[in-house]
Length: 170
Image (cartoon, rainbow, N blue to C red):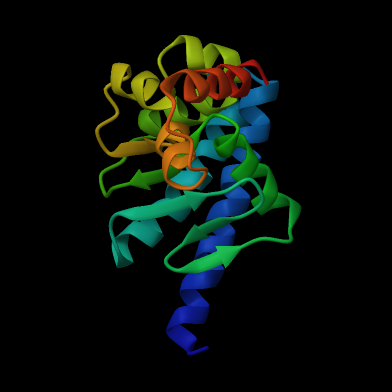
C-alpha cells in the first residue's frame, strides 16, 4: 500500500470514528446539545478534509461491512455499527458532496436514528432526507424486489410483496 492510499485510509478511519461518535450522541442528546454539536463539528472537519481530496464520498453498506474508495471496512465494531445502522434502514449507499453543511449532516444522523418502522412509514430514508432539502447528501435505498427477482428467481408479484411485508415487519 503506497503512502497516499495509506493516508486516505487513515482519514477514512478517522471519519468513520467521528461518524460513530456523532451517531451515539444523537441517540443520547438533543440536536442542540453542545456535546452533539461538537461531535458534528469534528465529523464535518474530517469530512471536509476527505472531500477536499476527492468529491463526492460514496459509502456502500452491507449488513456486516462498509466500503469507501474501494476500501472495505469490517471486523471492527465502529464499522459494523455504522453499516448496520444504514443497512437496517434499507440504505444501500450514502453519497456526500463538497459543500455539505452541518445541518445536512445533522439531518442524516437524525434520519438514520429513526426507528426502522418510522423510516418505512415516512417513505424511506431517501424521502426523509429529500424533505429536509439536503442536496449535498443522497442515499440510494436497497431494492429487495429486484434482488428477489434477479437473485432469488422469484417472479410472482404476490410472493415478492409478501416477502417485502415480512422484511418490513422485522
